[in-house]
Length: 515
Image (cartoon, rainbow, N blue to C red; front, side):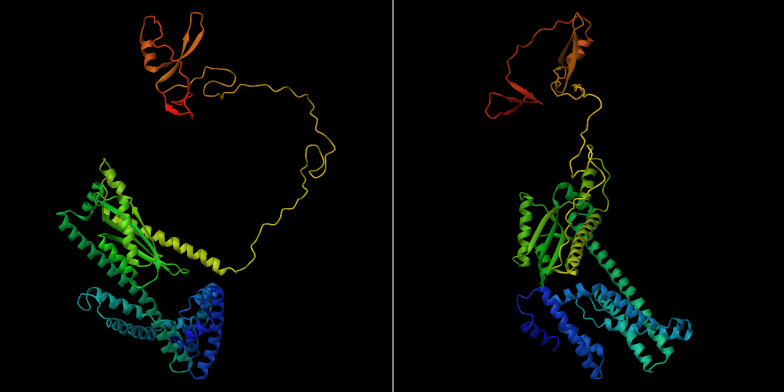
């Protein structure tokens, strides 16, 4: 009833289509609290645990996303502190720490801890979904993971032990031994689970690397993975892609995505998928390596990948983005061909860089969740704070003429000395073709030209531009020189502008390169 009947009745008669999400969440929250209070009393009256009533009430709304969002936004921080306070004041204070020094309680607690072996044995009932023999390889991994996950005794075991000692079912010494065993299982199980996952992940990674080495060795005629990858980068036949998809959560999306990449003969370097709390979309990001085909532009290959992936997802409103990715080790490989230090561990560094990029992308969405959560926690319809209107306030500072800035001054400022006439003073800053007072000694010099002063018989100076090579020849010569005109004036009608000529006889002021 709680899982199949009541949710349908609520959606039919109360949560009608088109209702505001915030209103939906608040109404569902009120109904859930009413059910919690009513069902707790009902289950207690039937000699059952009142916790069963709270569990049934929560089961009614276990699939209501709007209620979950409203509950988290209203009670998340309060719930964290209430759980800490109530757990410490109920279960935490009932831990008999002083009794743990007794040898009898310690050996009994260690004996009770051996019950974890029974949980591990339950893990070996997991079916074998692999192609390997039973209880070997990945099947052994699945069995140990399930067993270690079930080994931890939760806080409910504390509740049962406390209830038993309160009702006189067990004595205090046995209660202390049981609590000691529960604490040990709570500590041992998470570390054993972490060790199991880490160990089998390392084994799987080593097996993948060995298989990749063997395949590459067979295909490349004895070359290693790094050698093949390096030669592909230098020859321009290896290309890396970053494929990002945003789609609705649906069964089979990830297998379809991977199948499309395998059909395109792309080798997946790393992949990650995540979803945000406030959206029903799933984000998949894949870093892959492919072969750059001849006579096919990179843009065309990217377009082919986008169309293939989009058709594999089978969602018209999905967003697929494929970009070319250049790992940082590529620059080192190119530099090594020009005398640089050879790059080492190329494949491993490419995989680590892809992993860092995936971490960065997932972290961005986590920050977006925090921002949306802060908006969700704020009150809807709260007035927006605006800056107060500035007020005109009389201050101590007053104008020079006396009085204040709101009333006219009674005195007028008069200088003691007479004002002198302003003089025009020549500064060091001058225009490009001279200065603003008629000095024409500053000229524009082209590359390879210098400005020389020609001294006449009466010590008069004439400025002239000259090529630097001509000046050196004149300076090295020891005989008098005679200057003649080598080419008459061509009456050029134009204006030189930093190496370009603006011809005045052309329409529109066409700019051409100066001869």
